[in-house]
Length: 444
Ligand code: B12
Image (tube, rainbow, N blue to C red; front, side):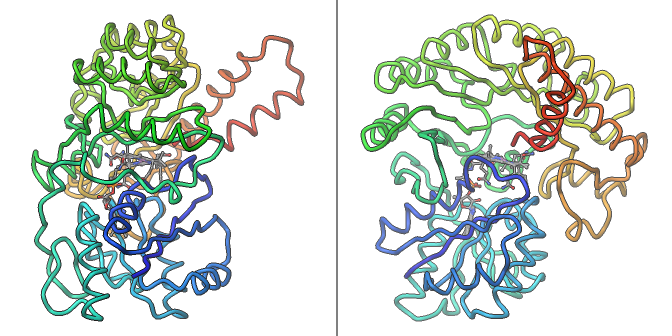
């Protein structure tokens, strides 16, 4: 059977496509099926996409969906289904936590809840052998009108899974992306990683062995030009024995520069030193808010301001580029809290920063809280999740407040960029910087 995975791009295309399908494609290929990939660029006409799909002759179409991709995907799949009669299955975070709404939207025949490798294989096997799905349910897969399905076990030993199918990742310039674990051990109340752990229980949390990760990288380096590695995991540096072994082997066998996402609390001095030694060039810290109250009470993040400042200083002194990520429009936040975030950013003086208007993702504790206390509109599945304007009715912040503060972050970022130029800056240069900052506001 041939599965076609569609990558729904938005006005901002990230350096890598959805990761889930790349794992699923490798898995089903190993078991004898075919996987093909089609990128759906922003603004592409449905008509063109339909022609391309027809020429690829798939037996099934798979789409990975986050909240942000949802509205565009919904329209496109409806258009496709008006013309082509091929089953469509959606998977990923949104279908896992809003399966009924995805199925009710028209166009999607099935959704996959949670991990997709085994359910997708079972589905393709049945389509091939029996010519249809049959009446016996498939674990994790929910059909139109079905109740939520039973979840099969997760893949216990992820070292046994094949490496990601990189032809589905849309990578370029010798920059490669890696995922080294499934799940995240921390419990931030806004993060979908917590929802996945809650869906399955603690067994969802798995880590690849250092040997397995290095083997994938060695294979990559031996077959292509490899200039830089981006480790995508939410955070992988919490286990110092693992990091020590990884850093030693990475330096010995791979050696190219790399970047990581890290938690402030986990970046202890000795960990930073080991990573820098191995080639760390860039670290992204999720600071989220400059208000300790918001971080602790609303987001369940316990780091102190001092700890954040110290970690930023140390990382910069170690020679890495440091990026901070912030959110604004968090439930319970006041204008003073957002001012504190802007002040903290001044103190941290990162090389760059990302700023996102808070969106409560289905499945997260904060989503349930926003629904319960009436902050979330009932028609949220029909509204965009663009991280530039708020979807919430917040008690202390109006929608205009959020727009103004978003603008303040944009101005602060323009200043950061201007500072990078050593010579005098004329009006033309300033205008160029402004447009660059506005266009790249979503750092992803
Ligand atoms: C790597 C990553 C990225 C990468 C790749 C994104 C991707 N969708 O794969 C990049 C850098 C592009 C990225 C960008 C962004 N990201 Co991001 N990212 C992650 C991160 C840290 C890890 C994902 C990962 O490694 N997955 C590993 C694979 C194996 O798991 P998986 O993706 O869940 O896939 C499995 C199943 O879901 C299922 N499945 C997935 N797709 C499909 C499709 C089919 C057909 C089937 C059958 C099954 C299936 O099977 C897969 C294999 O088991 C997650 C946090 C997390 N822990 O999930 C956030 C996360 C996915 N990102 C998030 C966000 C918000 C963003 C950005 C909006 C950030 C920004 N403001 O710019 C953008 C938006 C991207 C987009 N396209 O919409 C949110 C999404 C929340 C939501 N519910 O919508 C998450 C959950 C983090 C969070 N804050 O909670 N991100």
